Structures are given as structure tokens and as C-alpha cells.
Image (cartoon, rainbow, N blue to C red; front, side, top):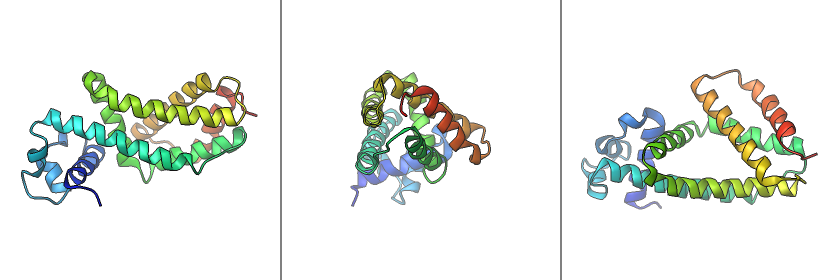
Length: 186
């Protein structure tokens, strides 16, 4: 069971992902967490403190999610890898849409506030290390370099689909083309 602080931060991630950064206020977080007014302010005295804590909580949740996935996914070959990554894209755009939007909102905040880059950067490096391991296990010649290109492509694809949704049936073909073009996996 999450602590009250975690409950508030999870609610803040939801507010951020559903309503954007301008809506991220102590009052909105209290309402989203169904807690009394002033609860968020008791833990996070300023908006900057709230954003910093949200960033750390997001990175913690992101790390836990990828750790769980890493134990379940072991694709062999380019097409199997493309299938796994297509599933990730569909999830990011569907059931995890609010979390995905919160992620990109935090990236923008980190660009403006370098102090936030630490937790997000550490989480991103862990994710890329896991993805490079998948590529290595699939036989990629340069898994780290290929991983960077592939992950950058996926980030761009997801961001573009969030802002300018296209037909979802073309996503699998786009991911498969990218895997085949960017990776030496057979």
C-alpha cells in the first residue's frame, strides 16, 4: 500500500499526464488524491519541491515497470523485437497514455530545470541498458549504438502520435522498418 506521500505523487503524475504542467498545483493534487486540502502542501512546500518530488517518483515507478518487463521479455530476432516494441508503443499510447504524457512533460521540465535531469537520466540509462541487452542477446553487432538510435526513434514516434495521432494500424510496420533499418539483428 502506498504511503500518503506516494499517493500524492501518483496523483500528481496523473494530473500532469491528463491536464498538463499548468494544472499541476497543490490543490489539484489534493483533489486527484481525494485527500484534504493542504495535504500536498504539507509534504511539498513549493511547486518546485512538488515537481522535484514528482520527477523522483516518476523515475522510481518507471524503473520498477521496466524491471518487471525485463524479466518477461526475451525476443530472438528482429521481427520478435519489433513485436515487443510495437506492444510498448501501443501501451504508451493507450492504457499508459497519461503516464506517457507526464513523462514528456517532465522531460520538458528537465530541459528548463537541470536539477531534474538526474533522476530522469538515471532511469533512461537503465532503460537503455536493458534495451541494449535485448539487442545484444538478439545478436546485434553494436547494441549500444543501435539501441540509442532505436530508442530515439521510438520516443519520436510516440511523441508524434500523442500530438498528431495517425492510424494505429501503421505503427507495427513503422516499428518493424525501424528495427530492420537501425539494428543488425537478423
